[in-house]
Image (cartoon, rainbow, N blue to C red; front, side):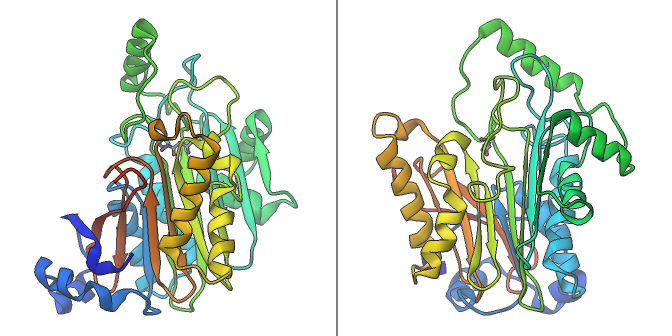
Length: 332
Ligand code: SD4
């Protein structure tokens, strides 16, 4: 997708005072010159959904100080993990069928190193536990009680991250036993990709997973390959949506491999959605899926399944305050 085709849903928040002041962004100017930023190699961060704007904001501050993409994505998604208004990630996230909050996250850097945690309870920032696994163990992934034990050994504090609000939502669900529709309110992951001033890529992904999932269920988000993949020679991709469908096509890895073979980022994301459509001919229209991707040269792309539902947040030197972009989708 050319940037000129993007529809800007809204411009968001706070500033990178130094750059923002000199750039004095105006919406019209941004729209008209968007195509210029398609493949420049400047610092850039993108993340799934509009709530990614505040996470991008934090990540961009790090990138602007010549910080690493790895630090940027970790710090960035920590904003969302701590934000009670995002009810599908971290603190105040959605509970499982039995009323427990089990968190999934993963992180991957430009060296191809990665860390992952699944079914982690009581810890507010699973992304930082994933990074600690990457940096302090010979392993990639820890789950459940082992992950919690590791986190506590590393000094992460056990906290009450199940809020009254989450329990109220869960009780409502228990009473109605309705299967929640796939709206942004009940299953949204933050996946974030960043390109730093050295030209290195990293990514992070964190979620409470599908609301009211079976205990022990793990989605795509902590899985290196489906939920996130970074290859510093080629590009990076991450996913949001119904994890089972994303796992079956190893979505993010697929997108990076398609970019390796020369596909544009948007076309690669579209192809991953197409594979899901083919695998789920009977149910794809009810699946919410969204992919975002960034190529090594900074060019970005995204694609969703359901009509006009998937959007992502982009922050870079041209849009220092961030912009929310509506992705094209299969059912448009
Ligand atoms: C999962 N992919 O656990 C996550 C949920 C999600 O938008 O992203 N929802 O399957």
